[in-house]
Length: 62
Image 1 (tube, helix red, strand yellow):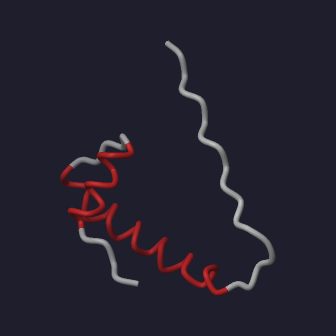
Image 2 (cartoon, one colour):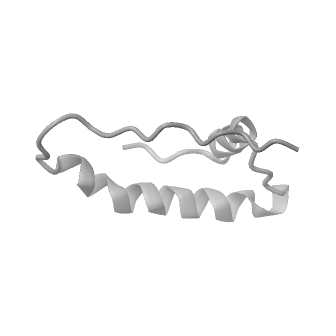
Image 3 (cartoon, rainbow, N blue to C red):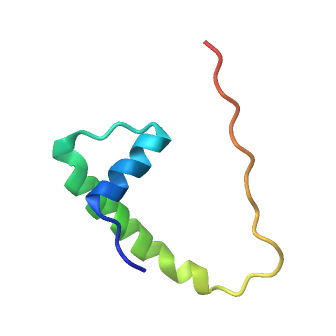
């Protein structure tokens, strides 16, 4: 799996509504890529059945 670039991480953060300061982007990108590398072996597990997808959380009302 290719690592994400800082621009890709910034785009993901923007569409997710997660603010990231420009000076933090390199560190956030490094940590996000490390997390993806750590989770990659889970994709090789032979699990029975269909994957479970959690429903989205309801939006908070003001």
